[in-house]
Image (cartoon, rainbow, N blue to C red; front, side, top):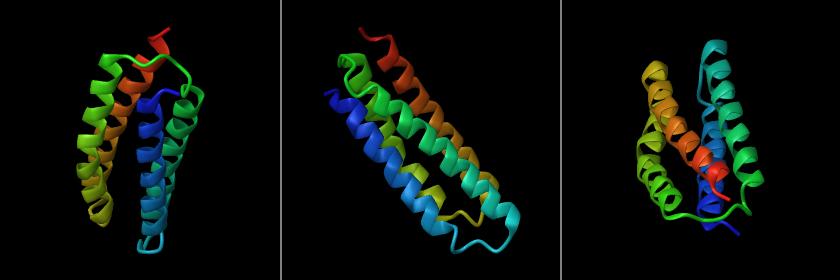
Length: 110
């Protein structure tokens, strides 16, 4: 099993749970829709990482997933401050771009 992909999948699934909890705190349909959209983005990547669990491991992928893990604190902070929606969405988008890089690396490995 590719441990980097497994770790990445766990990080992503945890963020889905955190976003789900935040749905109870929003006050507008616009905020709820934005959170649900981000949950869909995370869930899509959970699925992608699941499909890559048995791809070969590489040093480059390990480093990329480490960068994702380091960025996790920023996305967690953004989720906690979801009331400032546009800033939170920017942080989440940047985080998902890192995740996409790791997924692309995993796809490229034999």
